Image 1 (tube, rainbow over the protein chains, first blue to last red):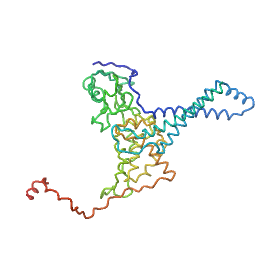
Image 2 (cartoon, chains in turn red, orange):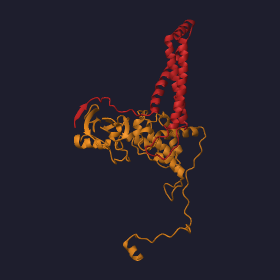
Image 3 (tube, rainbow over the protein chains, first blue to last red):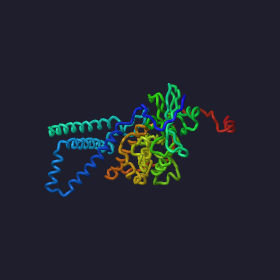
Image 4 (spheres, rainbow over the protein chains, first blue to last red):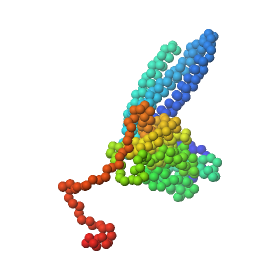
Length: 143
Length: 278
């Protein structure tokens, strides 16, 4: 037996066992912040008095292939945010979360149960397919 | 099996900032985290502060973060964690009183806000005469949420709970438990508290509260059902509930013909009765 003191704790080899929905929550937050920021920048730029010279510079900036990854990230964020958002709307209206029941050990929660996971995977799969399609389009433009 | 317990220590009266202290102990196969902590407190360091009571997952006092996940120390076996280093920390989102003990007064104040008791429009509760009628399916609708032990694990696991004004998973689950109770008449009284920016709409359904609940209460389910209830109410689609009536008085009871008479009494109120009977 021994006792030692440390000011900082080292990273222990313990599993991170939080559920998938929690990670989806953080992804939803991150994509949401990104999209809102994008929206404000978009409104700000289009709120400027645009003359021919400014329009030409905007066209040049967005026509530059280095901007394509940005657009791709934007589309990806929309797809993931939209798919997960749709799941949240459905579950918050009481769909796919089950009903109250007598809890039996080991108490699997019905709100994050099979039905909810299936709808999550379906929506995220659709989003990923659309992202792949979008990636193909961007690669086509780059070529 | 030798295990290192890395325990969060903080005494607000002495320490400037929290620190971690390591204790290396030998544990048996079925040793729970609470037993290991009590061993440390009894044999190695009696200054360690822990809160516990029943040691069997009923009272909900020994909630703490074990390897980052909120759990009841009395229900968690060390061998189940599959790690030789066990990180023990107090529940997050609550002020720390000392070491692993946190202050729940804010949570209990919120619990009080949602009026966690049956509300009736009639005067039956003040002058009770008989029981309320409740069907088995109505009872099973609330039973899951009535099993809550207010251990605060859901509050600690919730990523939104860093917002101290948020009512929190177990409080909202209790709100749903009373709202959906067939005997209750207090939906309108609780409505404004629940339908607020810091009420059920603050929940973004991360689902961690349901995952960590040691009693299978599923607070996330209750919160989503609250949202559904509020939405249908606002759209005018919710059926108006009438509180369960009081059971009617018993009429004359007649024994069925095929039911035999009970055997004679063998236990008497007092000796005098028994002497008289004999």
